[in-house]
Amino acid sequence: MSTVTPCCPPLTERPFTAEEAERTARMFKALGDPVRLRLFSLVASHEGGEACVCDISDVGVSQPTVSHHLKKLKEAGLLTSERRGTWVYYRVEPGVLAGMGQLLGTPSGA
Amino acid sequence: MSTVTPCCPPLTERPFTAEEAERTARMFKALGDPVRLRLFSLVASHEGGEACVCDISDVGVSQPTVSHHLKKLKEAGLLTSERRGTWVYYRVEPGVLAGMGQLLGTPSGA
View 1 (cartoon, each protein chain N blue to C red):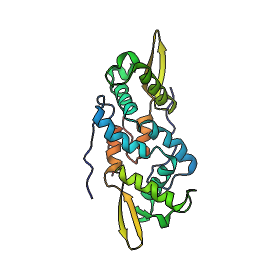
View 2 (view 1 turned 30 degrees about the vertical axis):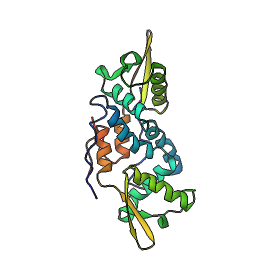
View 3 (view 1 turned 90 degrees about the vertical axis):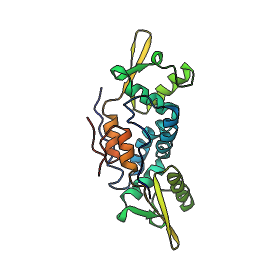
Protein backbone atom coordinates (compact mmCIF):
# COMPACT_ATOMS: atom_id res chain seq x y z
CA MET A 1 0.00 0.00 0.00
CA SER A 2 2.72 2.44 0.97
CA THR A 3 6.44 2.20 1.41
CA VAL A 4 7.36 3.18 4.92
CA THR A 5 9.00 6.55 5.15
CA PRO A 6 11.36 6.15 8.06
CA CYS A 7 9.88 8.32 10.76
CA CYS A 8 13.00 8.80 12.75
CA PRO A 9 16.75 8.43 12.90
CA PRO A 10 18.32 5.42 14.59
CA LEU A 11 17.66 5.44 18.34
CA THR A 12 21.42 5.63 18.88
CA GLU A 13 21.97 8.75 16.74
CA ARG A 14 20.51 11.48 18.94
CA PRO A 15 17.75 11.79 21.55
CA PHE A 16 14.30 11.42 20.03
CA THR A 17 12.02 14.43 20.09
CA ALA A 18 8.68 14.07 21.87
CA GLU A 19 6.91 13.84 18.53
CA GLU A 20 9.23 11.16 17.15
CA ALA A 21 8.89 9.15 20.35
CA GLU A 22 5.10 9.44 20.23
CA ARG A 23 4.93 8.07 16.69
CA THR A 24 7.45 5.29 17.21
CA ALA A 25 6.25 4.12 20.61
CA ARG A 26 2.92 3.14 19.02
CA MET A 27 4.59 0.38 17.01
CA PHE A 28 6.59 -0.92 19.95
CA LYS A 29 3.52 -0.82 22.18
CA ALA A 30 1.50 -2.84 19.67
CA LEU A 31 4.18 -5.56 19.78
CA GLY A 32 4.46 -5.29 23.56
CA ASP A 33 1.59 -7.69 24.18
CA PRO A 34 2.42 -11.42 24.02
CA VAL A 35 -0.77 -12.39 22.17
CA ARG A 36 -0.35 -9.61 19.60
CA LEU A 37 3.31 -10.51 19.13
CA ARG A 38 2.36 -14.15 18.46
CA LEU A 39 -0.31 -13.05 15.99
CA PHE A 40 2.15 -10.73 14.27
CA SER A 41 4.72 -13.53 13.89
CA LEU A 42 1.96 -15.87 12.73
CA VAL A 43 0.91 -13.46 9.97
CA ALA A 44 4.52 -12.59 9.10
CA SER A 45 5.52 -16.24 8.75
CA HIS A 46 2.32 -17.53 7.15
CA GLU A 47 2.33 -19.11 3.71
CA GLY A 48 1.90 -16.41 1.08
CA GLY A 49 2.72 -13.72 3.64
CA GLU A 50 -0.88 -13.28 4.72
CA ALA A 51 -3.36 -14.82 7.14
CA CYS A 52 -6.99 -14.42 8.10
CA VAL A 53 -8.71 -15.18 11.39
CA CYS A 54 -9.74 -18.46 9.72
CA ASP A 55 -6.04 -19.48 9.71
CA ILE A 56 -5.58 -18.82 13.42
CA SER A 57 -6.79 -21.28 16.00
CA ASP A 58 -4.02 -22.04 18.44
CA VAL A 59 -3.14 -18.90 20.33
CA GLY A 60 -5.44 -19.62 23.26
CA VAL A 61 -7.85 -16.73 22.75
CA SER A 62 -11.25 -16.52 21.06
CA GLN A 63 -11.74 -15.49 17.43
CA PRO A 64 -13.23 -12.10 18.39
CA THR A 65 -10.17 -11.45 20.54
CA VAL A 66 -7.89 -12.43 17.64
CA SER A 67 -9.80 -10.00 15.40
CA HIS A 68 -9.48 -7.26 17.99
CA HIS A 69 -5.71 -7.70 18.26
CA LEU A 70 -5.25 -7.85 14.49
CA LYS A 71 -7.10 -4.54 14.23
CA LYS A 72 -4.80 -3.04 16.86
CA LEU A 73 -1.76 -4.17 14.87
CA LYS A 74 -3.27 -2.58 11.78
CA GLU A 75 -4.00 0.68 13.62
CA ALA A 76 -0.35 0.78 14.71
CA GLY A 77 0.71 0.60 11.06
CA LEU A 78 2.19 -2.89 11.35
CA LEU A 79 -0.34 -4.83 9.27
CA THR A 80 -2.47 -4.06 6.24
CA SER A 81 -5.76 -5.78 5.54
CA GLU A 82 -7.89 -6.71 2.57
CA ARG A 83 -11.36 -8.22 2.58
CA ARG A 84 -11.86 -11.09 0.14
CA GLY A 85 -15.24 -12.79 0.35
CA THR A 86 -16.03 -13.75 3.93
CA TRP A 87 -12.63 -13.07 5.38
CA VAL A 88 -10.28 -10.19 6.02
CA TYR A 89 -6.70 -11.10 5.16
CA TYR A 90 -3.81 -9.47 6.98
CA ARG A 91 -0.23 -9.07 5.86
CA VAL A 92 2.78 -7.25 7.24
CA GLU A 93 2.89 -3.66 6.05
CA PRO A 94 5.68 -3.54 3.47
CA GLY A 95 8.82 -1.93 4.81
CA VAL A 96 7.75 -1.96 8.42
CA LEU A 97 10.34 -4.53 9.53
CA ALA A 98 13.10 -2.72 7.65
CA GLY A 99 11.89 0.57 9.13
CA MET A 100 12.03 -0.78 12.67
CA GLY A 101 15.42 -2.28 11.88
CA GLN A 102 16.64 1.19 10.93
CA LEU A 103 15.43 2.54 14.26
CA LEU A 104 17.53 -0.06 16.00
CA GLY A 105 20.49 0.92 13.90
CA THR A 106 20.67 -2.43 12.14
CA PRO A 107 20.93 -2.37 8.34
CA SER A 108 17.59 -3.03 6.70
CA GLY A 109 17.05 -6.56 5.43
CA ALA A 110 15.51 -7.85 2.22
CA MET B 1 28.34 -7.66 30.86
CA SER B 2 26.77 -10.42 28.82
CA THR B 3 26.35 -10.99 25.14
CA VAL B 4 22.70 -11.37 24.35
CA THR B 5 21.71 -14.89 23.49
CA PRO B 6 19.03 -14.41 20.88
CA CYS B 7 15.86 -15.56 22.56
CA CYS B 8 13.93 -16.33 19.48
CA PRO B 9 14.00 -16.77 15.72
CA PRO B 10 13.08 -13.88 13.41
CA LEU B 11 9.39 -12.98 13.73
CA THR B 12 8.97 -13.89 10.07
CA GLU B 13 10.40 -17.42 10.35
CA ARG B 14 7.59 -19.26 12.16
CA PRO B 15 4.87 -18.38 14.67
CA PHE B 16 6.30 -17.59 18.08
CA THR B 17 5.47 -19.94 20.93
CA ALA B 18 3.67 -18.48 23.94
CA GLU B 19 6.90 -18.57 25.92
CA GLU B 20 8.94 -16.81 23.22
CA ALA B 21 6.25 -14.15 22.86
CA GLU B 22 6.16 -13.61 26.61
CA ARG B 23 9.91 -13.01 26.81
CA THR B 24 10.12 -10.81 23.74
CA ALA B 25 7.01 -8.72 24.36
CA ARG B 26 8.64 -7.37 27.54
CA MET B 27 11.28 -5.53 25.51
CA PHE B 28 8.79 -4.12 23.04
CA LYS B 29 6.46 -3.09 25.86
CA ALA B 30 9.28 -1.24 27.61
CA LEU B 31 9.89 0.79 24.44
CA GLY B 32 6.16 1.25 23.89
CA ASP B 33 5.97 4.30 26.11
CA PRO B 34 6.99 7.65 24.56
CA VAL B 35 8.88 8.89 27.61
CA ARG B 36 10.78 5.62 28.01
CA LEU B 37 11.58 5.58 24.31
CA ARG B 38 13.01 9.10 24.53
CA LEU B 39 15.05 8.14 27.57
CA PHE B 40 16.32 5.02 25.82
CA SER B 41 17.42 7.03 22.77
CA LEU B 42 18.96 9.64 25.07
CA VAL B 43 21.07 7.01 26.84
CA ALA B 44 21.87 5.19 23.59
CA SER B 45 23.06 8.37 21.87
CA HIS B 46 24.79 9.99 24.86
CA GLU B 47 28.48 10.77 24.83
CA GLY B 48 30.43 7.76 26.04
CA GLY B 49 27.36 5.54 25.60
CA GLU B 50 26.08 6.16 29.09
CA ALA B 51 23.97 8.67 30.97
CA CYS B 52 22.78 9.29 34.50
CA VAL B 53 19.68 11.10 35.74
CA CYS B 54 21.99 14.10 36.18
CA ASP B 55 22.37 14.25 32.39
CA ILE B 56 18.64 14.29 31.75
CA SER B 57 16.64 17.43 32.18
CA ASP B 58 14.53 18.04 29.10
CA VAL B 59 12.03 15.24 28.73
CA GLY B 60 9.24 17.02 30.55
CA VAL B 61 8.99 14.72 33.56
CA SER B 62 10.44 14.94 37.06
CA GLN B 63 13.74 13.31 38.06
CA PRO B 64 11.99 10.62 40.16
CA THR B 65 9.88 9.76 37.10
CA VAL B 66 13.00 9.59 34.95
CA SER B 67 14.57 7.22 37.51
CA HIS B 68 11.44 5.09 37.53
CA HIS B 69 11.44 4.71 33.75
CA LEU B 70 15.17 3.97 33.60
CA LYS B 71 14.60 1.17 36.12
CA LYS B 72 11.80 -0.23 33.96
CA LEU B 73 14.12 -0.23 30.94
CA LYS B 74 16.71 -2.05 33.03
CA GLU B 75 14.18 -4.63 34.24
CA ALA B 76 13.23 -5.29 30.62
CA GLY B 77 16.87 -6.12 29.88
CA LEU B 78 17.43 -3.06 27.69
CA LEU B 79 19.77 -1.08 29.92
CA THR B 80 22.47 -1.97 32.42
CA SER B 81 23.40 0.26 35.34
CA GLU B 82 26.41 1.00 37.48
CA ARG B 83 26.60 3.21 40.53
CA ARG B 84 29.59 5.56 40.63
CA GLY B 85 29.64 7.99 43.52
CA THR B 86 26.34 9.81 43.81
CA TRP B 87 24.89 8.71 40.49
CA VAL B 88 23.73 5.57 38.76
CA TYR B 89 24.93 5.46 35.16
CA TYR B 90 22.91 3.64 32.54
CA ARG B 91 24.05 2.22 29.23
CA VAL B 92 22.41 0.10 26.54
CA GLU B 93 22.80 -3.59 27.32
CA PRO B 94 25.40 -4.83 24.83
CA GLY B 95 23.89 -6.79 22.00
CA VAL B 96 20.32 -5.77 22.72
CA LEU B 97 19.91 -3.69 19.56
CA ALA B 98 21.45 -6.42 17.40
CA GLY B 99 19.22 -8.98 19.14
CA MET B 100 16.08 -6.98 18.41
CA GLY B 101 17.31 -6.47 14.85
CA GLN B 102 17.52 -10.25 14.49
CA LEU B 103 13.94 -10.58 15.66
CA LEU B 104 12.90 -8.21 12.91
CA GLY B 105 14.84 -10.24 10.41
CA THR B 106 17.34 -7.47 9.75
CA PRO B 107 21.02 -8.36 9.84
CA SER B 108 22.68 -7.43 13.10
CA GLY B 109 24.68 -4.21 13.10
CA ALA B 110 28.11 -3.44 14.47
